[in-house]
Image (cartoon, rainbow, N blue to C red; front, side, top):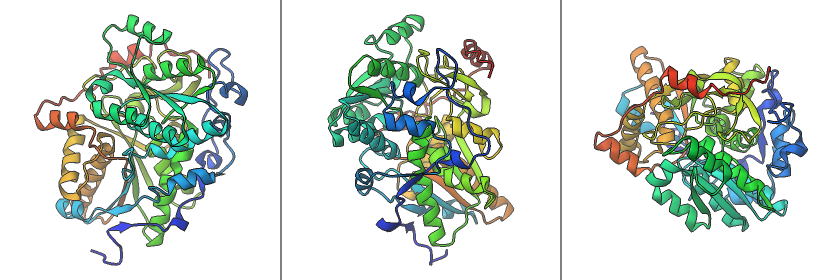
Length: 457
C-alpha cells in the first residue's frame, strides 16, 4: 500500500472547477443535430426555447464553446457538497487480492443521494433567472426527481414530477422525499395528460417507462404558462453540467500523479458516464493521452450493446425533438422486474457518437450480477451503492480480477453515482432469492423499433 496516497483524496475549495467542460468542442465529428419533429430540420434555439429555458437551449445547441463559466449562485450551492471525494478502495483491493489500484468518485454525499443534483441546481437556477413559475420533469428510479425537488425548493420554484409507475410503487420513500421538498409527484402514465391517457389505452396495465413520463412532463410544461420542461440525463446540456465530476476526478488524480488506465461509468441516458469521461475523452480526442473508457448498462435495457444508431423520438408520445442516438426504439418499455434506473430507450447523442467512433466501450450486466457486486462492495467499503452505480462496480471488479490473473497493476477509476438506501425493495428481492434476470428478445426489440421515424438522415 502506498502510504503517500490518502484513503480519500479531497480537493480544496479553490480546486473545485469554475467552468463546465463541453467535450463536443473537441470532437472533429460532432453529434448529429437534434431535429424538429414536425419539419425534420435541425431545431433552432428559438424553437427549443419553447420547451427548455433560454440559456439551457443555448447550451444544448452549442457544439463549439469548450468551457462555460459556472454562475456564482450555482458555485455557492455546490459548496454544500463539492468537491466530492475520490476514494481509494483499499479494502476492496484486499478482498479481491488484486494488484490493481481501484478508485471511485463518490457522488452520494448530498441529501438527494446522487450525482443528479449537479445538473438539477443548474437547471433550476436558469429557470429562476428567466422568471419562470416552475418546471416539470420525469424520473425513473427517483434520483433525478429527488435532486430536482431539492433544487427547486432552494430557488422557490414549483416542481411537478412524473415518476415511472413501477418505481412510484416500489420506491415510496424516494417519492416522499420529493414531496417533502414540495414537489407534486404523479405516477406515469397517468390520466392527467392526453398522452398519458393514450398510452394507457394502447398499453393497458403498463408499468410505464421514462419515454412515457417524458411525454407527460413535456405536455404538462407546454400547457401551463410560466413553466418549462427539464431533463435529468441524455441531453448535451446535462452532460455539460455533469462534467464537473470528471474535471474534479482528473484534478484529484493529477494531485498525486496518478494516471488511470480505465474509467468506468454506469449508462442509462448518459449523464453519469458522460460527465465522468468527458475530460478524459477530450484528452484522447486531442491526442494527449489514451485511456480505456467503459460504459456499463443493464442487459434488460441494452441501448448501446443491442440498439441501433439512428434518429429516434426521445419520448414514447413522440412530442419531443428527434435525436440521433443508439436506441431500442421509443416504444420500448423495460420489464417491470428491472430494479434500478438506467431504463431509458436511448442514449445521449454525445455518448452515442463517442461510442460509434470507438472511443468508448460498452458492456451489459444482469441484475443478479450487479447486486452481487453491490453486496461485495458494501461489505468491505462501508457504502451501500445504488443499483445504477453497481453496474460500474461489477465491471471494475471484473477488471481487477483480470489483473489478478495476469499480474498487471492497472489503475481503475469508476463512478459511484449514489447510495442505495432508497432501493431496499430491490435489495430485499435479491436477498430473498426472488430477483430475476431479464433480457428482451430480438422480436421484442424489433417490435419496439417498428415505428421509428424515417428521416433519411
